[in-house]
Length: 350
Figure 1 (cartoon, one colour):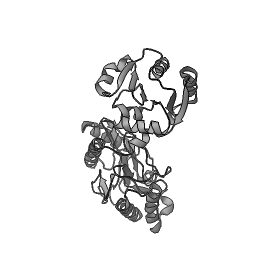
Figure 2: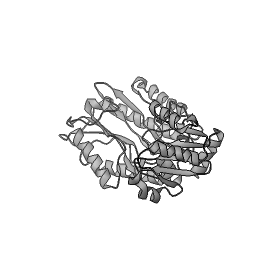
Figure 3: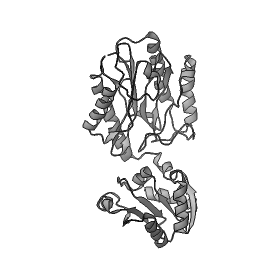
Figure 4: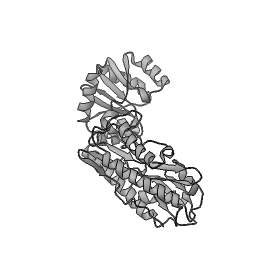
């Protein structure tokens, strides 16, 4: 099915074939999880070119693909295969190809090269049921890790210790790793949207923001929770309520056909109405899948479609005081959303 859809796009672009070098696109199209190799796909053939380290793995994972081994010079093997597959107009992934690599293609392949953008990425936007199964499990692991970490957070513990425990717990729960370098930001540092863990010690009255996720069979989750350690300042409690309401309001408004830009503006307007507009300094969310940030995006302004997975993550950040962010992963459905991270977002005071 994936090959059929990609070939439809090749036909539409008047291409005989495409060379796929992006590792996420390679995995998506072939199910091959190795860390090296390229795909060469024509209108009638599909080949995975790897070195000897991956031959057995490639045969086991990339079932629809013919496996071709290269020994030293990958580009020479690509040139041989392009010729044997009768490819005269070859697409390459422009966003993932350096100028140096392009010049090598032009020199060695001696065919018409055409830059392409987002041919595979546009297929990845809509998740299959199998992909959703993996993403539900990745979210479930992150949720269980959150329940665990609540018992670890207390005054005297450092952000770095919390971060390490989160990663360890997710791996013990079956994660293949962490989907990002977790954000663990407490006290005044919670006003830093990307505040990575430091040796700062958790104190009474701190708000603590945790932004992290799990990897499961290559697919990612991405959730954010903000908790209080002891009674927080009243202003931060007010901010928390606004962020919580914005999250729920935004999820209620999500629907197929709504542009991501419009969706972003709805959340932005809600926060603005409560007087905190200038403190919401990032987008409402982003696409999620094999990568932490993938289409659809606010910048590209794609439209929400059924079975897209999108993060919804409003936040308010006030320098010197602190900040709050809450984030859920949702699947866009015909009549609303499925929340993959459904744990309560009510303020937890530890």
